[in-house]
Image 1 (cartoon, helix red, strand yellow):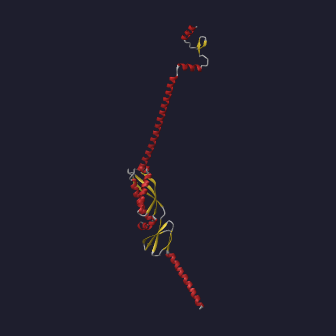
Image 2 (cartoon, rainbow, N blue to C red):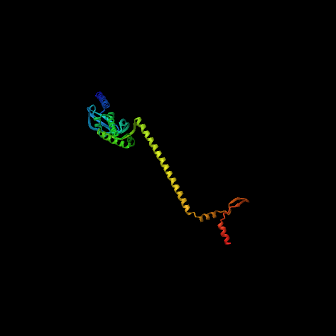
Image 3 (cartoon, one colour):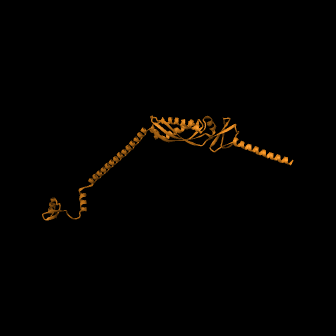
Length: 279
C-alpha cells in the first residue's frame, strides 16, 4: 500500500509538471495577452477583421489564433516634403515643407482599416495632400509675394492641410516652410532688384542730406543778412564816434613828413574858423 501511494504521488507530481510545462509553452508561443506600449494604440482584428474597440496603453488579454493586435504610434512625428509648384506669375518654386502630425488616438482602427500603417499613411495620404495644398496656395501669389508674405502663405497651407488630413483621422500639429528655391534666373533678378533698391535708398538719403544742408546754409545766410541789416539800423554817427573814443588809446596815428614822422590829425578848417571867431 505504501509503495502504491508513493508511486501515485510521484505520478501526480510528474503530471503536474508536464501540464505546467505545456501551459508555459502555450503562454510563450500563443501569447494570450498583448502589451501596448506608451505612445501606442492597439488595433484589434478577429480573423483579420478590424474591430471597433481600440486598446489603450497597458496589458490586455486576447484570444490566441482568433485575435491579433496591430500597434500604431500616436506620437507626434515630423516629416519633410519637397514639392514643385508655380507662382501666380508662373515662376517655378521648389518648396521644402516640414509637417508635424499624429494619428488621432480614437480613430486608430479606422486609419489602419482605410489607409494602413505609418509608411502607407505618409506615402498614400500626406505626400499627395502636401503637394496639392502647396500648389493651390502658391498659385494665388506672385513669387515676390511668396517671399514677402511668407507668414500668410504658411497660415493658408496649415489651415488647408489640417482640413484635408482630418478626413483621414490625421491631426496636423504644425507646418513649417523650411526653404524656397527659385530658378537661377529669377534668383539673380531678385538679387539685382534688391541691390538696385538699396542703391536707390542710398541715393535718396544722400540727396535728402544735401537738401537739408543747403537749406541750413540758406537759413544761416538769411540770419546773417538780417543781423547785418539790424546792425546798420542801429549804427549812427554819434554811436560810431562814441565807440571810437572808447577804444582810443591816447595816441594819434603817425605819418611821414619832411621833418620825419608827425601825428596825423584830421583838422576840419570850418572848426578852426569857428574857434578863431570865438577867440
